[in-house]
Length: 216
Image (tube, rainbow, N blue to C red; front, side):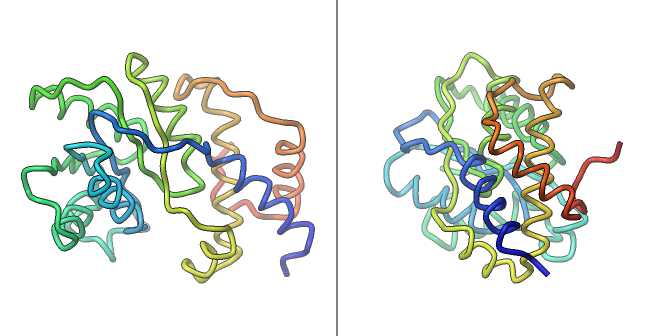
């Protein structure tokens, strides 16, 4: 049973984990691989809106995606973009990354190999991964400007799209844990976390929304 307090705390994490950036023209768009084809859709919308001339889709497969995306997340994103009218020449595919750090590092190497001069990136992720993706890119690629983007939807809409409310709350708690721990591990830049967000995370953790936590 998910209580009213659980939902209130989930909203607190959902809002914090999004950066609230206004999209602006960038050198390249990077769509981070996942189970969510909405990432590809947003990347394509931004491309058609003139936000960048070139996109990179990055991602191999994971336990979550190997059944749905057997060709690899990046390749399925590419196919989606082609269906939506993006020319092949505007897409690069990075098929090997298995975490956000590799998404950033491998995309950077791919762009270097293609001689693309990058001053800024429009980084597209799932809504609850915006902040961690931003913090990772700022750590691993500090000399570029990073603009974050994701599907514009409310938490309730996202829960409906996934069809598993408890899983979504678990994912929110897992994302928040990584935001707290990754700076100490050298994976991301440090960010200020408001006390009410930390308190919401603690309550959800105590309530048992823990399936997506990193092991101790």
